[in-house]
Image 1 (cartoon, helix red, strand yellow):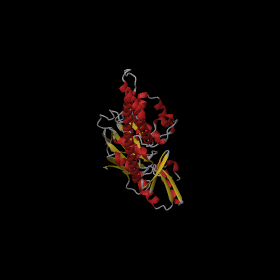
Image 2 (cartoon, one colour):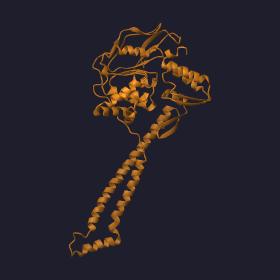
Image 3 (cartoon, rainbow, N blue to C red):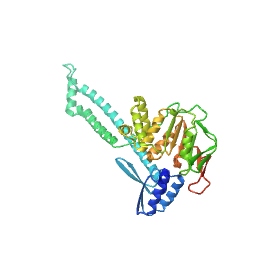
Image 4 (cartoon, rainbow, N blue to C red):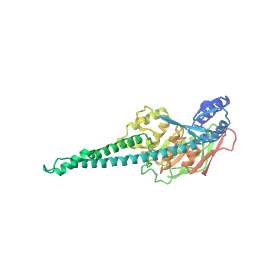
Length: 400
Protein backbone atom coordinates (compact mmCIF):
# COMPACT_ATOMS: atom_id res chain seq x y z
CA UNK A 1 0.00 0.00 0.00
CA UNK A 2 2.92 2.34 0.69
CA UNK A 3 3.75 2.24 -3.06
CA UNK A 4 0.17 2.36 -4.41
CA UNK A 5 1.08 4.64 -7.31
CA UNK A 6 3.67 2.16 -8.58
CA UNK A 7 1.34 -0.86 -8.44
CA UNK A 8 -0.03 -2.31 -11.66
CA UNK A 9 -3.78 -2.24 -12.33
CA UNK A 10 -3.98 -5.89 -11.32
CA UNK A 11 -2.08 -5.40 -8.08
CA UNK A 12 -4.42 -2.58 -7.09
CA UNK A 13 -7.49 -4.71 -7.84
CA UNK A 14 -6.08 -7.56 -5.75
CA UNK A 15 -5.62 -5.26 -2.75
CA UNK A 16 -9.16 -3.91 -3.06
CA UNK A 17 -10.74 -7.38 -3.16
CA UNK A 18 -8.62 -8.58 -0.23
CA UNK A 19 -9.89 -5.67 1.88
CA UNK A 20 -13.52 -6.40 0.95
CA UNK A 21 -13.20 -10.08 1.94
CA UNK A 22 -11.36 -9.22 5.17
CA UNK A 23 -14.41 -7.24 6.33
CA UNK A 24 -16.59 -10.40 6.06
CA UNK A 25 -19.78 -8.63 4.93
CA UNK A 26 -23.26 -10.21 4.95
CA UNK A 27 -23.75 -9.12 1.35
CA UNK A 28 -20.87 -8.90 -1.09
CA UNK A 29 -21.33 -7.25 -4.49
CA UNK A 30 -18.40 -7.47 -6.90
CA UNK A 31 -18.31 -5.62 -10.20
CA UNK A 32 -15.79 -7.17 -12.60
CA UNK A 33 -13.48 -8.47 -9.85
CA UNK A 34 -11.15 -10.24 -12.29
CA UNK A 35 -10.32 -7.14 -14.32
CA UNK A 36 -6.53 -6.68 -14.37
CA UNK A 37 -5.74 -9.61 -12.04
CA UNK A 38 -3.60 -12.52 -13.18
CA UNK A 39 -4.75 -16.09 -13.59
CA UNK A 40 -3.13 -17.31 -10.37
CA UNK A 41 -4.97 -14.61 -8.41
CA UNK A 42 -8.20 -15.48 -10.22
CA UNK A 43 -7.85 -19.03 -8.89
CA UNK A 44 -7.27 -17.70 -5.35
CA UNK A 45 -10.27 -15.39 -5.73
CA UNK A 46 -12.41 -18.30 -6.90
CA UNK A 47 -11.39 -20.32 -3.85
CA UNK A 48 -11.99 -17.44 -1.41
CA UNK A 49 -15.39 -16.54 -2.84
CA UNK A 50 -16.36 -20.21 -2.93
CA UNK A 51 -16.09 -20.34 0.87
CA UNK A 52 -17.98 -17.04 1.34
CA UNK A 53 -21.19 -17.79 3.30
CA UNK A 54 -23.04 -14.54 2.72
CA UNK A 55 -25.15 -13.37 -0.19
CA UNK A 56 -23.06 -12.79 -3.29
CA UNK A 57 -23.83 -10.66 -6.32
CA UNK A 58 -21.26 -11.05 -9.06
CA UNK A 59 -21.06 -8.93 -12.20
CA UNK A 60 -18.35 -10.42 -14.38
CA UNK A 61 -17.26 -11.31 -17.90
CA UNK A 62 -15.10 -14.16 -16.58
CA UNK A 63 -16.89 -17.29 -17.75
CA UNK A 64 -14.81 -19.69 -15.67
CA UNK A 65 -15.54 -17.73 -12.48
CA UNK A 66 -19.27 -17.55 -13.22
CA UNK A 67 -19.40 -21.29 -13.89
CA UNK A 68 -17.61 -22.04 -10.64
CA UNK A 69 -19.52 -19.73 -8.28
CA UNK A 70 -22.99 -18.99 -9.60
CA UNK A 71 -26.15 -21.02 -9.17
CA UNK A 72 -28.22 -18.60 -11.23
CA UNK A 73 -27.43 -16.04 -13.91
CA UNK A 74 -29.48 -12.96 -14.72
CA UNK A 75 -29.34 -12.08 -18.42
CA UNK A 76 -30.14 -8.41 -18.91
CA UNK A 77 -31.18 -7.52 -22.46
CA UNK A 78 -33.27 -4.34 -22.25
CA UNK A 79 -36.19 -4.14 -21.98
CA UNK A 80 -36.06 -7.71 -20.63
CA UNK A 81 -34.19 -9.46 -17.84
CA UNK A 82 -34.31 -13.27 -17.62
CA UNK A 83 -33.05 -15.40 -14.73
CA UNK A 84 -31.72 -18.83 -15.71
CA UNK A 85 -30.40 -21.65 -13.55
CA UNK A 86 -26.77 -22.70 -13.44
CA UNK A 87 -23.44 -21.08 -14.17
CA UNK A 88 -22.82 -19.09 -17.31
CA UNK A 89 -22.11 -22.02 -19.64
CA UNK A 90 -25.29 -23.87 -18.66
CA UNK A 91 -27.44 -20.74 -18.61
CA UNK A 92 -25.98 -19.50 -21.90
CA UNK A 93 -26.65 -22.87 -23.50
CA UNK A 94 -30.25 -22.65 -22.32
CA UNK A 95 -30.52 -19.12 -23.74
CA UNK A 96 -29.26 -20.33 -27.11
CA UNK A 97 -31.77 -23.19 -27.10
CA UNK A 98 -34.56 -20.71 -26.34
CA UNK A 99 -33.33 -18.46 -29.13
CA UNK A 100 -33.33 -21.36 -31.61
CA UNK A 101 -36.84 -22.34 -30.53
CA UNK A 102 -38.00 -18.76 -31.01
CA UNK A 103 -36.32 -18.60 -34.40
CA UNK A 104 -38.02 -21.81 -35.51
CA UNK A 105 -41.37 -20.46 -34.32
CA UNK A 106 -40.72 -17.24 -36.21
CA UNK A 107 -39.80 -19.06 -39.42
CA UNK A 108 -42.88 -21.28 -39.10
CA UNK A 109 -45.14 -18.28 -38.53
CA UNK A 110 -43.50 -16.48 -41.45
CA UNK A 111 -44.13 -19.43 -43.78
CA UNK A 112 -47.75 -19.65 -42.62
CA UNK A 113 -48.26 -15.93 -43.19
CA UNK A 114 -46.78 -16.21 -46.69
CA UNK A 115 -49.03 -19.19 -47.46
CA UNK A 116 -52.18 -17.40 -46.27
CA UNK A 117 -51.23 -14.22 -48.08
CA UNK A 118 -50.74 -16.20 -51.30
CA UNK A 119 -54.12 -17.87 -50.83
CA UNK A 120 -55.69 -14.43 -50.29
CA UNK A 121 -54.28 -13.24 -53.62
CA UNK A 122 -55.67 -16.31 -55.40
CA UNK A 123 -59.11 -15.88 -53.84
CA UNK A 124 -59.21 -12.23 -54.83
CA UNK A 125 -58.42 -13.22 -58.39
CA UNK A 126 -61.21 -15.83 -58.37
CA UNK A 127 -63.61 -13.30 -56.86
CA UNK A 128 -62.75 -10.80 -59.58
CA UNK A 129 -63.41 -13.39 -62.28
CA UNK A 130 -66.72 -14.32 -60.62
CA UNK A 131 -67.68 -10.66 -60.46
CA UNK A 132 -67.07 -10.26 -64.16
CA UNK A 133 -69.23 -13.34 -64.89
CA UNK A 134 -72.10 -11.95 -62.79
CA UNK A 135 -72.11 -8.62 -64.56
CA UNK A 136 -74.82 -8.08 -67.22
CA UNK A 137 -72.61 -5.58 -68.93
CA UNK A 138 -71.71 -6.81 -72.38
CA UNK A 139 -74.66 -9.21 -72.66
CA UNK A 140 -76.82 -9.09 -75.76
CA UNK A 141 -80.10 -7.25 -75.09
CA UNK A 142 -82.12 -10.33 -76.03
CA UNK A 143 -79.95 -12.90 -74.11
CA UNK A 144 -82.61 -13.67 -71.53
CA UNK A 145 -81.08 -17.02 -70.47
CA UNK A 146 -77.82 -15.42 -69.34
CA UNK A 147 -79.65 -12.67 -67.53
CA UNK A 148 -81.85 -15.22 -65.76
CA UNK A 149 -78.79 -17.19 -64.53
CA UNK A 150 -77.25 -14.02 -63.11
CA UNK A 151 -80.48 -13.06 -61.38
CA UNK A 152 -80.78 -16.55 -59.88
CA UNK A 153 -77.21 -16.40 -58.55
CA UNK A 154 -77.92 -13.08 -56.89
CA UNK A 155 -81.16 -14.43 -55.42
CA UNK A 156 -79.54 -17.56 -53.94
CA UNK A 157 -76.51 -15.68 -52.60
CA UNK A 158 -73.99 -17.51 -54.75
CA UNK A 159 -72.84 -14.20 -56.17
CA UNK A 160 -71.39 -13.20 -52.77
CA UNK A 161 -69.67 -16.48 -51.93
CA UNK A 162 -66.32 -15.53 -53.47
CA UNK A 163 -66.34 -12.22 -51.62
CA UNK A 164 -67.00 -13.95 -48.29
CA UNK A 165 -64.11 -16.33 -48.89
CA UNK A 166 -61.85 -13.34 -49.57
CA UNK A 167 -62.89 -11.66 -46.33
CA UNK A 168 -62.29 -14.87 -44.39
CA UNK A 169 -58.79 -15.36 -45.71
CA UNK A 170 -57.94 -11.67 -45.18
CA UNK A 171 -58.98 -12.07 -41.53
CA UNK A 172 -56.71 -15.11 -41.19
CA UNK A 173 -53.89 -13.17 -42.84
CA UNK A 174 -54.24 -10.34 -40.32
CA UNK A 175 -54.13 -12.84 -37.44
CA UNK A 176 -51.05 -14.55 -38.91
CA UNK A 177 -49.30 -11.20 -39.37
CA UNK A 178 -50.10 -10.20 -35.79
CA UNK A 179 -48.70 -13.50 -34.50
CA UNK A 180 -45.54 -12.97 -36.56
CA UNK A 181 -45.05 -9.43 -35.26
CA UNK A 182 -45.16 -10.65 -31.64
CA UNK A 183 -42.24 -13.05 -32.13
CA UNK A 184 -38.95 -11.22 -31.54
CA UNK A 185 -35.75 -12.76 -32.88
CA UNK A 186 -32.20 -11.50 -32.63
CA UNK A 187 -30.55 -10.39 -35.81
CA UNK A 188 -27.78 -12.69 -36.96
CA UNK A 189 -24.67 -11.33 -38.65
CA UNK A 190 -22.63 -13.37 -41.07
CA UNK A 191 -18.87 -13.29 -40.76
CA UNK A 192 -16.64 -12.31 -43.65
CA UNK A 193 -15.67 -8.91 -42.27
CA UNK A 194 -11.99 -9.29 -43.15
CA UNK A 195 -10.78 -7.57 -46.31
CA UNK A 196 -8.49 -9.27 -48.77
CA UNK A 197 -4.85 -8.39 -48.20
CA UNK A 198 -5.09 -8.77 -44.42
CA UNK A 199 -2.00 -10.95 -44.37
CA UNK A 200 1.65 -10.03 -44.65
CA UNK A 201 3.75 -11.50 -47.47
CA UNK A 202 6.85 -11.27 -45.29
CA UNK A 203 8.26 -14.32 -43.56
CA UNK A 204 8.51 -12.63 -40.15
CA UNK A 205 6.46 -9.89 -38.54
CA UNK A 206 9.18 -9.32 -35.94
CA UNK A 207 12.37 -10.92 -34.67
CA UNK A 208 14.13 -10.42 -31.32
CA UNK A 209 17.49 -11.91 -30.45
CA UNK A 210 17.81 -13.53 -27.02
CA UNK A 211 18.07 -10.78 -24.44
CA UNK A 212 16.50 -9.05 -21.48
CA UNK A 213 14.39 -6.00 -20.73
CA UNK A 214 14.60 -3.94 -17.57
CA UNK A 215 11.41 -3.97 -15.49
CA UNK A 216 12.56 -1.70 -12.71
CA UNK A 217 15.38 -1.19 -10.22
CA UNK A 218 17.09 -4.56 -9.88
CA UNK A 219 14.39 -6.39 -11.85
CA UNK A 220 14.57 -7.73 -15.39
CA UNK A 221 12.97 -10.18 -17.81
CA UNK A 222 15.10 -12.63 -19.77
CA UNK A 223 13.75 -14.09 -23.00
CA UNK A 224 15.00 -16.49 -25.70
CA UNK A 225 14.93 -15.80 -29.44
CA UNK A 226 11.44 -14.52 -30.29
CA UNK A 227 9.87 -14.32 -33.73
CA UNK A 228 6.44 -14.35 -35.29
CA UNK A 229 5.25 -15.54 -38.69
CA UNK A 230 2.48 -13.84 -40.71
CA UNK A 231 -0.27 -16.16 -39.45
CA UNK A 232 1.04 -17.12 -36.00
CA UNK A 233 -1.34 -16.91 -33.04
CA UNK A 234 0.51 -16.29 -29.79
CA UNK A 235 -0.71 -15.90 -26.20
CA UNK A 236 1.50 -13.96 -23.77
CA UNK A 237 0.73 -14.87 -20.16
CA UNK A 238 2.21 -14.34 -16.72
CA UNK A 239 1.47 -12.85 -13.29
CA UNK A 240 0.85 -9.16 -12.74
CA UNK A 241 4.02 -7.12 -12.80
CA UNK A 242 5.93 -9.85 -14.67
CA UNK A 243 6.74 -7.53 -17.58
CA UNK A 244 4.21 -8.56 -20.23
CA UNK A 245 3.34 -5.01 -21.27
CA UNK A 246 7.01 -4.03 -21.15
CA UNK A 247 7.89 -6.89 -23.49
CA UNK A 248 5.07 -5.92 -25.84
CA UNK A 249 6.44 -2.37 -26.06
CA UNK A 250 9.85 -3.81 -26.92
CA UNK A 251 8.29 -6.00 -29.63
CA UNK A 252 6.46 -2.99 -31.10
CA UNK A 253 9.84 -1.30 -31.54
CA UNK A 254 11.11 -4.21 -33.67
CA UNK A 255 8.23 -4.74 -36.10
CA UNK A 256 8.90 -5.69 -39.70
CA UNK A 257 5.80 -3.98 -41.08
CA UNK A 258 4.36 -0.54 -41.73
CA UNK A 259 2.49 1.23 -38.95
CA UNK A 260 -0.78 1.28 -40.91
CA UNK A 261 -0.76 -2.54 -40.98
CA UNK A 262 -0.68 -2.79 -37.17
CA UNK A 263 -3.64 -2.88 -34.79
CA UNK A 264 -2.50 -2.24 -31.23
CA UNK A 265 -4.99 -2.19 -28.36
CA UNK A 266 -3.29 -1.02 -25.16
CA UNK A 267 -4.43 -2.12 -21.73
CA UNK A 268 -6.24 1.18 -21.19
CA UNK A 269 -7.46 3.76 -23.72
CA UNK A 270 -7.39 7.31 -22.38
CA UNK A 271 -10.13 9.91 -22.84
CA UNK A 272 -8.19 11.91 -25.44
CA UNK A 273 -7.70 8.83 -27.62
CA UNK A 274 -11.38 7.88 -27.29
CA UNK A 275 -12.50 11.29 -28.48
CA UNK A 276 -10.00 11.19 -31.34
CA UNK A 277 -11.49 7.86 -32.45
CA UNK A 278 -14.96 9.39 -32.70
CA UNK A 279 -13.58 12.32 -34.71
CA UNK A 280 -11.85 9.90 -37.08
CA UNK A 281 -15.07 7.94 -37.59
CA UNK A 282 -16.99 11.10 -38.50
CA UNK A 283 -14.37 12.02 -41.11
CA UNK A 284 -14.59 8.72 -43.01
CA UNK A 285 -16.07 8.41 -46.47
CA UNK A 286 -19.58 6.95 -46.77
CA UNK A 287 -18.22 3.68 -48.14
CA UNK A 288 -15.60 3.27 -45.41
CA UNK A 289 -18.03 4.39 -42.72
CA UNK A 290 -20.54 1.79 -43.88
CA UNK A 291 -17.93 -0.97 -43.70
CA UNK A 292 -16.87 0.22 -40.24
CA UNK A 293 -20.45 0.20 -38.96
CA UNK A 294 -20.90 -3.35 -40.27
CA UNK A 295 -17.83 -4.46 -38.32
CA UNK A 296 -19.04 -2.67 -35.18
CA UNK A 297 -22.42 -4.42 -35.45
CA UNK A 298 -20.70 -7.79 -35.66
CA UNK A 299 -18.60 -6.90 -32.63
CA UNK A 300 -21.82 -6.46 -30.66
CA UNK A 301 -22.34 -2.68 -30.81
CA UNK A 302 -25.11 -0.39 -32.00
CA UNK A 303 -23.35 1.78 -34.58
CA UNK A 304 -25.73 4.75 -34.57
CA UNK A 305 -25.59 5.13 -30.80
CA UNK A 306 -21.81 5.09 -31.02
CA UNK A 307 -21.70 7.78 -33.73
CA UNK A 308 -24.06 10.01 -31.74
CA UNK A 309 -21.93 9.83 -28.58
CA UNK A 310 -19.34 12.43 -27.63
CA UNK A 311 -17.01 9.84 -26.19
CA UNK A 312 -17.32 6.03 -26.28
CA UNK A 313 -17.27 3.84 -23.20
CA UNK A 314 -14.00 1.96 -22.54
CA UNK A 315 -15.47 -1.20 -24.08
CA UNK A 316 -16.83 0.63 -27.12
CA UNK A 317 -13.47 2.37 -27.58
CA UNK A 318 -11.73 -1.02 -27.76
CA UNK A 319 -14.18 -2.25 -30.38
CA UNK A 320 -13.81 0.96 -32.35
CA UNK A 321 -10.02 0.80 -32.32
CA UNK A 322 -10.17 -2.80 -33.56
CA UNK A 323 -12.81 -2.03 -36.20
CA UNK A 324 -10.89 0.96 -37.57
CA UNK A 325 -7.77 -1.16 -37.82
CA UNK A 326 -9.66 -3.92 -39.62
CA UNK A 327 -10.66 -1.51 -42.39
CA UNK A 328 -6.93 -0.95 -43.13
CA UNK A 329 -6.08 -4.59 -43.89
CA UNK A 330 -3.92 -5.31 -40.80
CA UNK A 331 -1.01 -7.73 -40.89
CA UNK A 332 -0.65 -7.94 -37.11
CA UNK A 333 -3.06 -7.48 -34.20
CA UNK A 334 -1.57 -6.92 -30.74
CA UNK A 335 -3.98 -6.71 -27.81
CA UNK A 336 -3.09 -6.08 -24.17
CA UNK A 337 -5.93 -7.41 -21.98
CA UNK A 338 -8.53 -7.18 -24.79
CA UNK A 339 -11.45 -8.50 -22.72
CA UNK A 340 -11.22 -5.78 -20.07
CA UNK A 341 -14.33 -3.55 -20.09
CA UNK A 342 -16.18 -5.89 -22.46
CA UNK A 343 -19.42 -7.64 -21.59
CA UNK A 344 -19.81 -11.34 -22.29
CA UNK A 345 -21.71 -11.00 -25.59
CA UNK A 346 -18.98 -8.63 -26.81
CA UNK A 347 -16.23 -11.05 -25.78
CA UNK A 348 -17.95 -13.82 -27.72
CA UNK A 349 -18.29 -11.48 -30.73
CA UNK A 350 -14.57 -10.71 -30.42
CA UNK A 351 -13.81 -14.43 -30.42
CA UNK A 352 -15.95 -15.02 -33.51
CA UNK A 353 -14.31 -12.15 -35.39
CA UNK A 354 -10.72 -12.95 -34.41
CA UNK A 355 -11.18 -16.67 -35.04
CA UNK A 356 -11.43 -15.84 -38.74
CA UNK A 357 -8.69 -13.21 -38.95
CA UNK A 358 -6.06 -14.09 -41.59
CA UNK A 359 -3.25 -12.08 -39.99
CA UNK A 360 -0.89 -12.54 -37.05
CA UNK A 361 -2.36 -12.38 -33.55
CA UNK A 362 -0.51 -11.58 -30.30
CA UNK A 363 -2.78 -11.54 -27.24
CA UNK A 364 -1.84 -10.58 -23.69
CA UNK A 365 -4.55 -11.79 -21.33
CA UNK A 366 -5.44 -13.54 -18.09
CA UNK A 367 -8.60 -14.94 -19.71
CA UNK A 368 -7.44 -18.49 -20.41
CA UNK A 369 -10.67 -19.51 -22.13
CA UNK A 370 -10.35 -16.59 -24.55
CA UNK A 371 -6.71 -17.44 -25.26
CA UNK A 372 -7.34 -21.15 -25.80
CA UNK A 373 -10.06 -20.36 -28.32
CA UNK A 374 -7.83 -18.06 -30.38
CA UNK A 375 -4.15 -18.99 -30.01
CA UNK A 376 -1.96 -22.02 -30.60
CA UNK A 377 1.32 -20.97 -28.96
CA UNK A 378 1.89 -19.73 -25.42
CA UNK A 379 4.72 -17.49 -24.23
CA UNK A 380 4.63 -17.63 -20.44
CA UNK A 381 6.58 -15.36 -18.08
CA UNK A 382 7.37 -16.74 -14.64
CA UNK A 383 10.06 -16.87 -11.98
CA UNK A 384 11.63 -19.60 -9.89
CA UNK A 385 11.58 -17.21 -6.95
CA UNK A 386 8.69 -17.38 -4.48
CA UNK A 387 9.07 -13.72 -3.51
CA UNK A 388 6.16 -11.52 -4.69
CA UNK A 389 8.66 -9.00 -6.06
CA UNK A 390 10.74 -11.60 -7.91
CA UNK A 391 13.71 -9.92 -9.52
CA UNK A 392 14.49 -12.39 -12.30
CA UNK A 393 11.66 -13.24 -14.69
CA UNK A 394 12.00 -15.71 -17.55
CA UNK A 395 9.96 -16.43 -20.66
CA UNK A 396 9.26 -19.95 -21.90
CA UNK A 397 7.53 -21.04 -25.12
CA UNK A 398 5.04 -23.91 -25.26
CA UNK A 399 2.08 -25.15 -27.28
CA UNK A 400 -1.34 -25.18 -25.70
